[in-house]
Length: 234
Image (cartoon, rainbow, N blue to C red; front, side, top):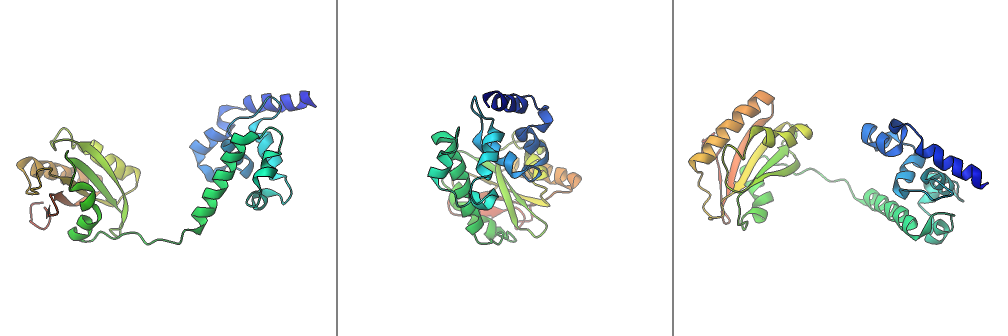
């Protein structure tokens, strides 16, 4: 019996790299894995007697069976599986609970950012009190709905910091249709500087080449903002 279990463990370790659950997940996404493989990743490592895949298989074969049974399993039942232990039991139960909570979240409408005031309402309180300039890219889909935002740099805004490569990288990664540029002036005065205008012009040109249009550049002060689009400065 011990020889068989040991052999299973060795076989798991000897799998070709591309067939190991973690590598398969990174290559093809979580949906490409079986329930057993996903559970094995959660468990992490096996024991001297059982591999992580062995433990996953035993759990999925408990009374009730499969994922439906996993949703109802108690800590005591899971802990009783040889090799699980307290840490592995907690990992699995935490993941089950996260899945349950995610399923309970109602569908959410994406936030539409069609006007500078919408962007200001979304980001003003986060940026108005910053003591450093934060240059942020806001990514939108084809309906001008918010996808994500990412800080590109901290500190003074100039050509070297707001490089098109850094600005558009997250937009390309998110398949954004367009972006809005925002940054703050710690002085509280949102009037654009010559550097702000030069950087905006450069990024608009880069966006046109990439097919990811720069819709606006907002500068935040203390409770007030300037939209370069509204001021016809871009």
